[in-house]
Length: 100
Image (tube, rainbow, N blue to C red; front, side, top):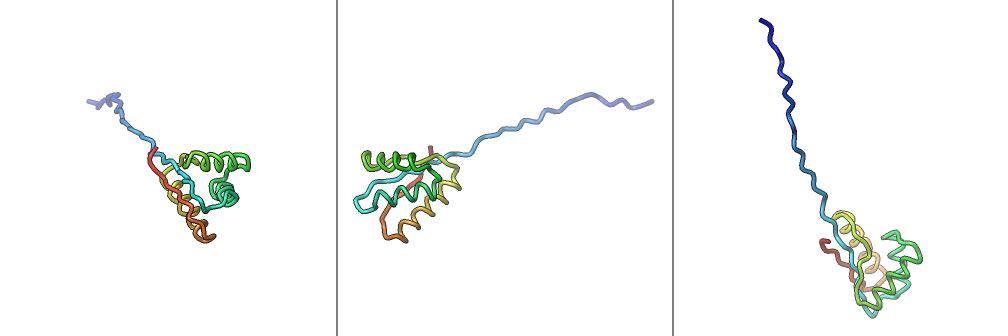
């Protein structure tokens, strides 16, 4: 007697979830120059000149502003790079990140 193979299909449930995103926030201070903030936004956060100017003015007027929303690794590395750049230039620029 020949064995028959059944046509049973197994369903595999795959639950995917997207990683959390983090907001990178620039805080206003009285010592960091506006030109330096624009420079950081262009070099570290890859903003255009017009975007960087708009963000810089928003930070200046509102006290703080979200610069962008990134994955955790990108938010941490960009924050660390920008903070190191500010400290090297002698500015107390405060940049934080928090979950979206």
